[in-house]
Length: 246
Image 1 (cartoon, rainbow, N blue to C red):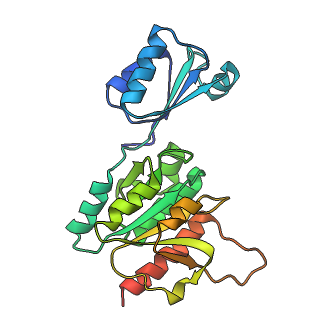
Image 2 (cartoon, rainbow, N blue to C red):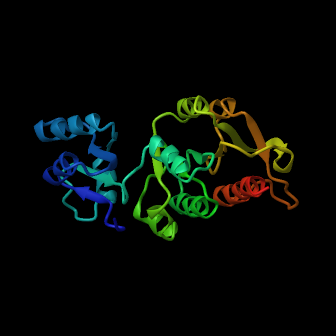
């Protein structure tokens, strides 16, 4: 699947996009508009558990590329999402202990694309992203991944903490990146593992961090106290690679 346009505008077009099974990340609807066609669209959106944002006409006009949105715009994924089960199956087929990268609220599409690219090169079996307050699989993400999105499955989940707990039951351990953690070189990062990377500004949320088994910090020698999220992912992912190669 290519990097096709990610917006669908107009009532008939949006309704058809839902009914055809197209993967839609977000739906923007004119606030206060509750006529029959809009109700049909929001009903379809709720069936698919799509995020619905009620916004002003000015916001819709900003998002519109046709000027004919008719009070509704759908933001579609450029690629299909995998499931968490697909990611585990990927590891099983390669006869390797699962290595999964979990992103807690990454909002920059360039960061997400770069992380998917790193995940592919580091041999991660998949990437899990948050459904809310996070970027989805947009064309920019696809381009930035440099083709890795074709090979590395990406799953989208409603609750990161619940997903971590479900994966723990399948034998995975979880390490999250945080400046206040143990230096990554002093941790055992072998075996079935999930690497959790937080939001660009706030890091891993306290609730998600509470569900992790280990907290890893990257040694810092410079004058600022943090790395870009995609760079931090690369550093920690390759420490996991190093330990797995022992």
